[in-house]
Image (spheres, rainbow, N blue to C red):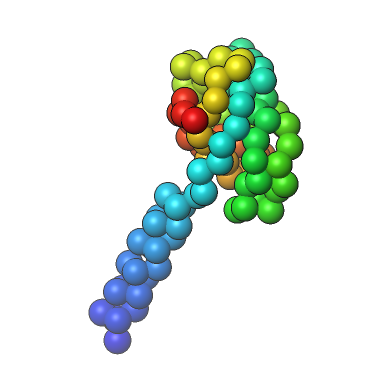
Length: 96
């Protein structure tokens, strides 16, 4: 019985990690980057995991280093999620 419980816990842990990595990629255009505050303004398409329509909004960067290679006007592909209660960009790359 103990072995089954351990296997179940391990499976649930792995499925949670896989879910975290499966955030939808969203297209957008960078409007402003504020590296001092760790924030980025993006005009973006819908973000399904946050139940958010297309709009322009300010996001906090989960890691401020994400902002070093992007500037206003860049087309980007990014993921966003709620991190510590704040909607945050969790990954970003220049794209189409």
